[in-house]
Image (cartoon, rainbow, N blue to C red):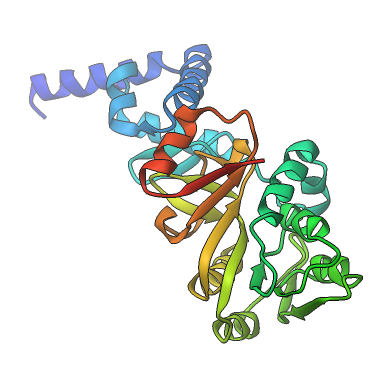
Length: 272
């Protein structure tokens, strides 16, 4: 090895070693702060900013992802979806926001429509906010939602079968997808883990994305219900681009600077 090449490598290694210990923690905190501010970070830019190698940055991002602080993507990272995989835990998240979102989403349903209602805690509240005298057909893969709708005398309720994902109480699998492919609905009310302008619609569970794709493909309009903390975040499994949606229903108080990127691609944004 030539002297100058050896010197360059030694300096690079020493620079990365200096970044260890307390400085590593400081750098990682700074990465999380940048992610909150900018909505994404790129490994190459972080390497230049902190004067460490891209290998070091990749280790930072990997460790931060394992700690649940971000979602790694090709070339960098995005904010991670705050969605808890446990259904009972999600029922306790943002109850006031979910109620307001559900009320606004329920207002999209018109008499005589065929509506696909997704599984999830917000979708369950949508079911609970539908008018008691509504005449419509509700197709759902959510046993809790079907039970909630059982007392509505004028509703036709179709429960899609399949394997139950216990964490989300959603029916998934080939049977569910096949059943949904035979439905032509006026509206789909879709639950999501994350919505991000770059990544699109994402979920925590792989099997659920195939069911959601079938729901979207079978509906004339698709409204994603999402609390403000899910906007600008990503989860591991991607359903598809945001353009698959027609509406986003979120809570009041979400700033226009957050909503602008969704309106720009033509989505109707409702705030409950």
